[in-house]
Length: 288
Ligand code: ZN
Image 1: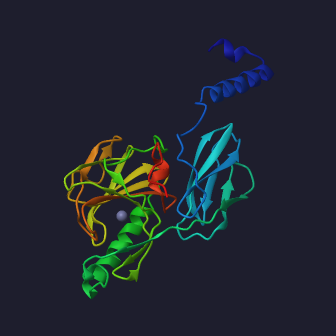
Image 2 (image 1 turned 135 degrees about the horizontal axis):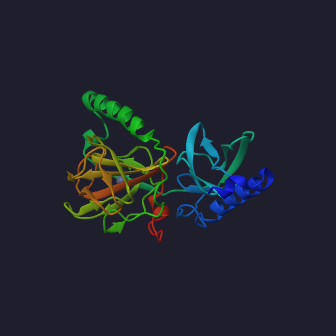
């Protein structure tokens, strides 16, 4: 240490540069374990941003986007909205001391199937009271969905939160009692009421509640805009603020909210956008 200060100035600079390079070399060969890419509405695009000493910042329509990797090459993990038109989205990228860049993200067309369901009439034609309740819940959900915590997720490879048959129903255009409603923005997994539901990845509980459509619901924040949501639960075993390991129990399968039978509805969000959870599972089955 003492000797270091006696090195001539020019050699000190070289020593400092070598130290930085050594630091870079010590980083893992890749950043996070990434989801599978599927650049369609409701899918995930993996966009190479190139090398830089510090991670650049990326945003889509003003919403921050997860960037991971290392100085040798950064990757934006972009959630593509289900209602995006095929063509191209524009990612805005800001690097430290670099001008704003616009990066085009190609979005291929996809055609999701239609699904017709019969539910209690009051869950489709809402009473004035239920409409007011739903509106309050919508505002609360919007707040939850806007969560951005600075920590990087531990992984983007997730566990299936409950064993059972995956419906592969993400994106289905849904018709309830002959009335078209919003497309299905998650994965349904059929399982008996009471089956334990676990956290798909490590994260913090940011909301729990009983929602009109989603029933008993738990939201987890995995960091950098990666959220997951678990709906229709018969029991909730966690509370906001709890830090959970991947695989920790959060509740049990149920049939609360707008359902035709007991199952888990599981959603995964990137940049405030619900994307196909199957892309985050190791074998990817359940994808359309
Ligand atoms: Zn569902």
